[in-house]
Length: 220
Image (cartoon, rainbow, N blue to C red):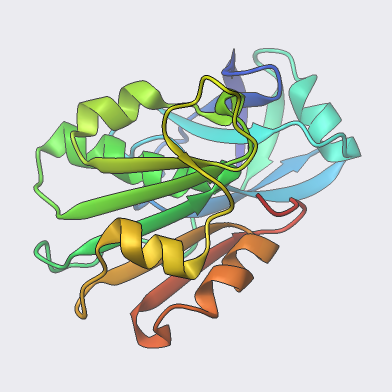
């Protein structure tokens, strides 16, 4: 289906959010993704970073230098694009009391941002611990969303500056288990670059893990 770009927000020098007009009748669940097609430049999958209650559909991505990303970052407002119906089951479980451990690597934070926005808007209580691994402090975006959600958030920086006062290093399964105070009935959602997701899921109980990997990105 066709839609248009309504806005482009630069969050950092490399990360931007792109918002598109929501087609009539378009409905999705927080955590789902769409396929975006740019004429002459192919297609790419993107998780929606907007809440289903927002007026527009938004994606958030990093400029990687690929031909597709260059075309996306060069789009002018009102440019026409094609999007698919929403897909994916990386969504909130039906049972509200299920303890959730969200583990994100880099731009893999986007499905959790969509879900945090929705939970804040609806006031729905959920027991959540969010661990977010980034390379540098400059990669930290959506701090306002995290603060508004009032959830337990830990950010781990692998290449921190001397001024960084939070957790440091590369996030491992052992580190994630300790920081999240993992319980036997916790549901663990892993989202991020394929190397990041593959590495962590090997050290976590398989029956508790749900994954969503982002191809085309290196490890954190």
